[in-house]
Amino acid sequence: MSEFKRNNVILKSNQTALLIIDIQEKILPVMQNTEMILENALKLIKGFKQLNLPIFYTEQYPKGLGKTAGVLLDELKNIAPIEKMTFSCFGAGNLFNMLKEKNISQVVVVGIEAHVCVMQTILDLIANGFQVNVCADAVSSRKVIDYESALDRMRGYDVEVTTSESVLFELLVECGTDDFKAISKIVK
Image (cartoon, rainbow, N blue to C red; front, top):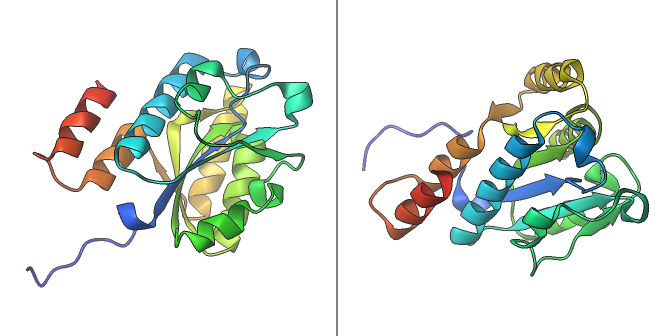
């Protein structure tokens, strides 16, 4: 074994969970790049399932904003949504406790809107000691300026701004495994 060490911000599969925030049918049509968001969120869901890693997803006021997008629900069928009325997932039931109970210290975040629910959740995760990785290719807002401003603000709080593919390959660590082959097919 080498005397050198890996950077602490690199995702570790035994400490990482995926959090999907409010990717709901009724608000998707007004978001920027909806096809990209759905495609990359789906890749992450499939990848996390392949690696047997925890996945959580929230729905903001589902009575008014509808359920999570159907294409994602097909992959999330054995996971219950966490309903919330607050913008931040800090108010989403027991979510933060569930993360702690599973010894999660790194949270990969995707969802909408980047400058509201995603931003407030990320700030609260950081305040509670979590490392946060946000996938720039799987978050969005209605306006480009809100999306860009949110990512800039997140960087100021030491959020790891990354992409869905980067996340999956960090979690894999090495190539040549069955998981690598399955993830490679997912990202193509």
